[in-house]
Image (tube, rainbow, N blue to C red; front, top):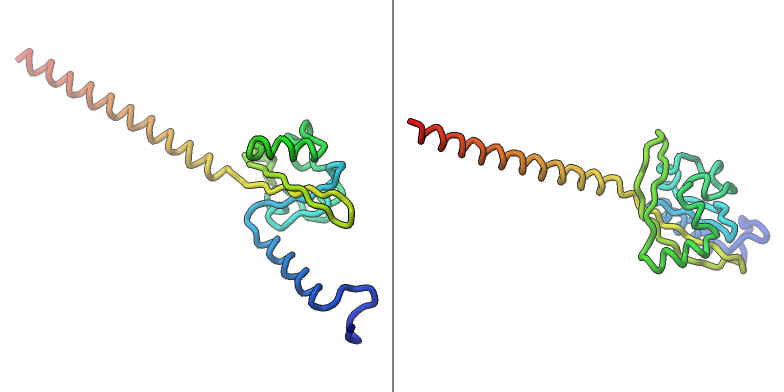
Length: 165
């Protein structure tokens, strides 16, 4: 039974409440969530996707996915992307961030049906922090190897000098 404050044709209040809660949760997710249709057109994005993919929802929605993530162009249509993602445990790609920087990401694709229309949900995880940590680790290992080489060289030089005396 509807209350007098509900609009005709609107879902009942408990359904509206759950919908608001679901949208709130979607926006709280740290990973980018991009929903596309069969043609690869962006249907919706969450707040994280807006931050990373350089765009407000009103500019992204209705645009081709490859405009936001050019590396995915060859993988369209989304069904092909889903098959490749499933077979490989996800896809690795680069996206262009707000400042034009390259952001390495890992993408998993899921399929959903809404009102008889196929939707593809892309969960996009930013791996730039992981890649930066790996680069720092490699640099640390490189510097440690140089330090060990210098220590060994100094030791050998000292031994050679001591034998001369």
